[in-house]
Length: 182
Image (cartoon, rainbow, N blue to C red; front, side):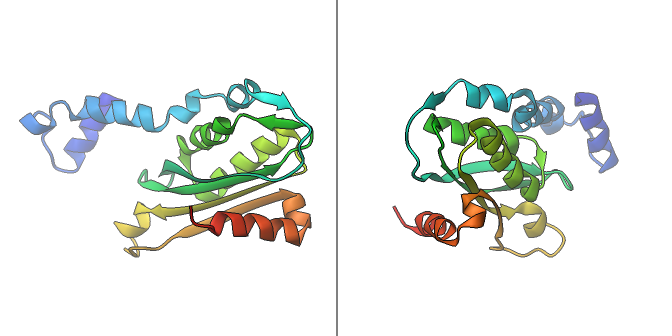
């Protein structure tokens, strides 16, 4: 990867041997490896290590999960908050696992729509809950730094499965909970 980064530096008109750039290929390679570590993470292992049998069928919500990802179209960051909820059916998962699952998929080259779906469908497949809801609010640097150059623009995506899709009152409860401050 370092050699390709040197070639990129040359192609944009830089000298990769210049003092300030000599270590840049190694730093960029290390950064990209870190930012895409989700490819080396197994969502099954993240979830399966912490699934517990519990007779609980009320909504569980984890909101304001910070995430960072890279847009697959421009390799520029997008970042924001994920809100994840599910209604268990005999099985719950450790609360930290929801945030870890967001990271598994966010730390890959992504589009926000796919990221939202991957989180929701993984929870649905692994826990078999009565419903799953995922809402992601994100700022995309590809919209801020290039193209339309719109600052303060948010993209909001949602995936609603099971009871969250079929029951308006369940969906409303989730939306009200994620809007609450504190």
